[in-house]
Length: 271
Image: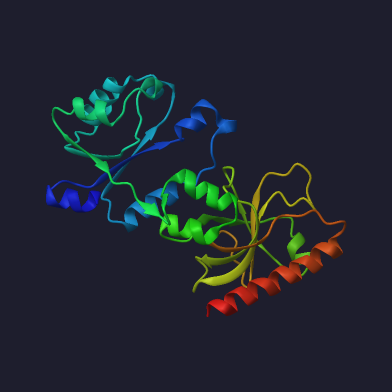
């Protein structure tokens, strides 16, 4: 909508986004999981034809701006906006006192429109709804809300090689932020030539690590090339099960074999 409107008005289409999320700034431990990294957001904007992206560093100075100061300093002076599209529940400025009505009342040099609410299966499409679907393992529902499969991107790094010793070498992708989902999944991986099917473990690996940080590990089916250093995108298609702690590595290996068999069955049914 914003790209088409910009074309109609002979304006450059642009998006203003914040990093980190304001809730991360005010209460990092209580902030909701990110649904995308900054780079992933930029890639999505580019794919949808957005010409410019402005990333506002959310810090103490930005948080201290009143709603009117945000309009005057950021929207008018810095960006020179002519037409602004926001969600109908948009809040901005110190204390979240700015809203759509405040924005419209102060719009002397630009026009303001509210983005229409989009509902999927009678539910408002929102980041909260996507997070809830991912946390519940409802990947089909999350895909309908997003309009695409949920994905995580990152660079393949060296790990402890445990998967290799068990007969299932994995591509390890470190996570910079708390993930929105966890468990064992059937996935599709992009960035290694043609898209590859695989099984992913996303979580803290309770059988092999204590107090570990979340890690994404992907075993690619019928694939044996080295891909260290590659940047890949992992699409989550079906949740197979939750993470579990097993008494020994033999038990874990048997379960991995079952996970692989279940993933193959899933992909075979999709063919």
